Length: 71
Image 1 (cartoon, rainbow, N blue to C red):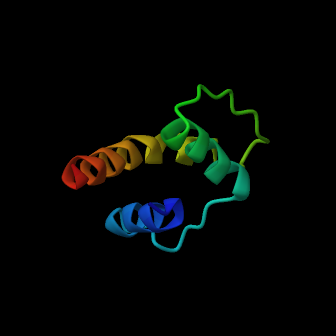
Image 2: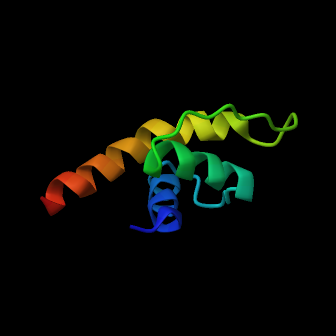
């Protein structure tokens, strides 16, 4: 499962297909969702920390749904 394609689908469904995630944002989402790690995300003001928190529920739902359908 490709993280970039799942994120692109979520952003498109939210009408935000013009957004692209920065490497540190992708790294945080990868660690939380795929590696099941707790994260302390320390990034500069305006870097997009809130986008990580906004995408996380949708990303978890989409990953869970795809995993469930594969069973």
